[in-house]
Length: 331
Image 1: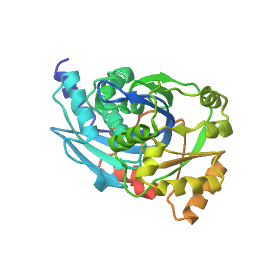
Image 2: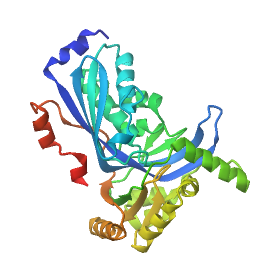
Image 3: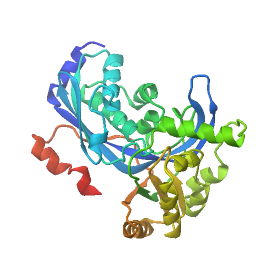
Image 4: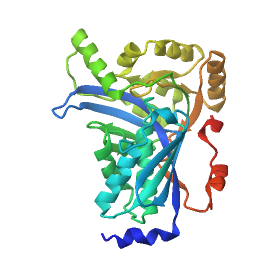
């Protein structure tokens, strides 16, 4: 592929993409593999709480972050969105740059794959900005090189993840589920949570077994049975997350007392996810959490993967900000 392909992008000054967060409806963690990763089997579910990323034509690859918890996100070459754009350019064989502006809504280090969502958004936005047209399957393959959750962040919807989570098999559901997400103060390091899981298992004499996902959960998804789905939610990392952040137990208990159909720590935490019967029930849960002193966010799903919401129609920064309000105003 020649560099002239990237030069043809002059008519597109920027591309804006939204990418959703994820919940692990079931996260089954197996033994450590030879490469240092754990074997996992997980049911990924994309929920409609989205980061927005705008990729603008530029000579170099740079990033800025605005919105909720922006100060916690790196703005150097370690940023996962920057790494995604760089990998895309290298593999496509183009010398192209972009300025990435990330508007954060997904809790940072919250177990909802916010960094992976930003990487997926960068792949989709830069693919459009640079006129590469690689296709979603090729971007998913690139995502697997960036992190275990990035392929699903590109995919969206609902999928069974295996290996370290990067191998995906779509799962069918035509039903919409309502969720309430309660972020916690501070974040949890995913490697630290996995390490704590290993310590707990060593203490309890856990015997390594292949991870599995129960048929009850898959059936509940297919039927749209929220009550059955709530009963089937499970996360092997939850005991480790609770040991590292004991306050999460009180948050889970509050949700159960408020009538959530299901409650669990999302991924490696510390965000807690609560399943509601419908939108009205979700609103009641949010009200109850607010009265208990918690921030609560209502999201529905399964949500589609990254989507282009603007491709340069807004002439300046003020017009873009008016069309896409800051994340903090939309909670």
